Amino acid sequence: MSFWLELIATGLITGGIYAVVAIGLNLQYGLMRIMNIAHGEFLMLGAYFTWLAHTVLHVNPLLFLPIVAVILFLVGLGVYRLCFRRIARTAPTADIVEARSLLVSFGLMFVVQNAAYLVWGADLRGYSFLDESVAIGGARFSANRLVVLGFAVAASLALLAVLRFTLIGKAVRAMMQSPTGAQLVGIDTAVLHPTVFGVGLALAGVAGALLSMVYEISPAMGEPYTVTALIVITLGGLGSTLGALIGGFLLGVVEAFGMHFTSPSLKMLLSYGVFIAVLLARPKGLFAR
Amino acid sequence: MRTQHALVAMLALALAAAPWMLSDFMLSLVLTCLMYAGLTVTWAMFSGATNYLSLATAAFFGIGAYVTAWGFGTLPYAVVVPLGGVAAAVFAALIGAAVLHLRGAYFAVLTFGLGELVRHAITYFEKSYAHTVGRVIADPPESTTVYLTVLAVAATSVWACVAVRRSRFGLALAGIGADEERAQTLGVNTRRTKIAGFALSAFFAGALGAAMAVRWTYIEPNSVFNPFIGFQTVLIAMVGGAHTLIGPLVSSVVFSLLTEFLRLQFPYLFLILLGLVLILLVLYLPGGLASLWPVLRARIAAFGARLAAQEGGVRG
Image 1 (cartoon, chains in turn green, blue):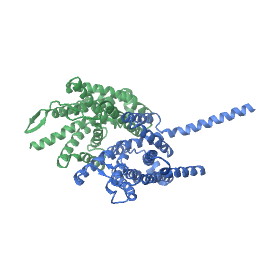
Image 2: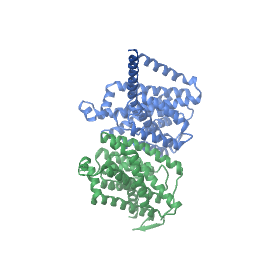
Image 3: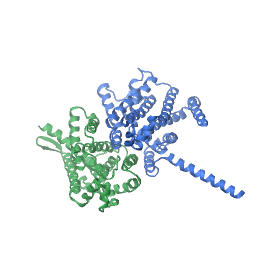
Image 4: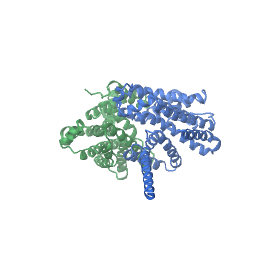
């Protein structure tokens, strides 16, 4: 019994991180058609900021979470202003926005990743935080993992609540349904787009901060998370936030089981297998009606 | 037209004579140029024409290299190279069959992680079945042979691009890029065309990987599946203008030389710079430098006309 519990919990913990990363990416794609494949690099930045704050300034990483979110939100505003605003304005169709934003973020990925190599070097970094173990129902977990899971779920649910119950959330949903219609009823794209892009990066930063509490970090850590987030989005349906949340947990659990019964080095193959299977069977996502 | 043919023939002759004219260092520079020229031109043949962005060049290149790693020694070099191409093409056709009927975004996303995927798969395979991490290439062919082989593959890829552009197949690819539904209505089997185009461009990337692999004495997944190769290919094609043939050719020479000289000295700074170049280019010149050419030519013509008019005015 405790064995299964542990396995499921392991899956949910990685799944929680996947969900946070994927929701951020999905917001950007769903609202603006920006396919930001540099998303994982901002997760890496969040991880490095938290590591710096903890090792240099001795700040508690959990208290630092909101600060990371704010920093990356501001970074997001800057990146949107410099890179994506022009694409949104000049590209004639949504498909071209997609293609160009993909290429731009491909360049961005190399810029951010190599800047990190330049500043922090290629070594693995890490710190220990809350690593005593806790027993729940006969299974043992290290405390930091449970904290990570809790915060990942909280961040995702908070965002869902914002989207569902606030005026801004309503505006975002309206924009996703019909960009022109939303503008006709007075929703300001010039404010909403950078804000949502910033929120997406803030979520990536939070995910990175959470990851740094559990794993060692390196400048190359972001890329696999970008790929996984893209797979999660496909699972949940492009543009669907709830879908990304469920898809994230689902992929986490599938990976945990698959890796346990085959081999950890097959993780990537497993997620790609899931990805291709979903694309073949349900190209609009698992939950599409 | 005749001068063009003569120029191409002279260039081919000069390139073929290079091993006997140039020093080893210069020869390896030319080799890198040839490799990127082949990779870029065939990338642009598919992705430039159809607007389906493939970020999988590194994956195909690596597959080709691994065919060499496994086959070289038992099979001759001349067999291994096309075999590497075929392996990459088959892989591309399988992947393409799974996703190419979907929207372009899915395709780009899938190809983005493909290099990682193949790298992990090969690492796992080697560890659990062959009990090794990398492979040593014993007794590699002479550098002249390698050079001539790469030259042959690169020349074939340029020739293939020219042939494709002039064929119905090339028109179908360009039609898909312009408006896929319209192409379908006009009777193009878009799915089959896309898969064939993707596989063809993968064939050349794989063959180049197989041909270049003998230059490394030790092959391991981490060095062969280098994301930089894919990045550089996309960048070169975008700089040159992915819709043209000559643009990517010229810029592949420029960028290979830049890479050789700058990358070892400033590894990170250089990549940051290349990333910035790609961003600026997509933002301000999405058609690449080649899109400047018609504008420039029109300006020169206008300038010439004005001069002629002035002269006429003076005389009159």
